[in-house]
Length: 112
Image (tube, rainbow, N blue to C red; front, side, top):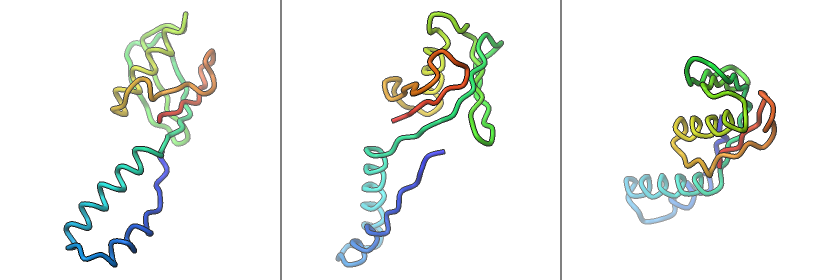
């Protein structure tokens, strides 16, 4: 679901340095992790099924189908959706934004 970035340039820089292979691997991994953390975002197509027996996420080929206990009333299901996605992807709730479909079962959600 997330896009991978091309880091071939980093391999060329590390190739010309005087670091050991182990150090280069460790540094390269840390740099790649930081770059990915700062510049990546994920966009998800989601179908929400509110008023379900349990909260669960099912991965389909082109979207996530998310069952929520909360009813689709006064934004309760949207809040529950954000809570569940934050736990699932191990991120902060503030990093999750419903881009399209606030009042629809079909949603586009962005995770920063």
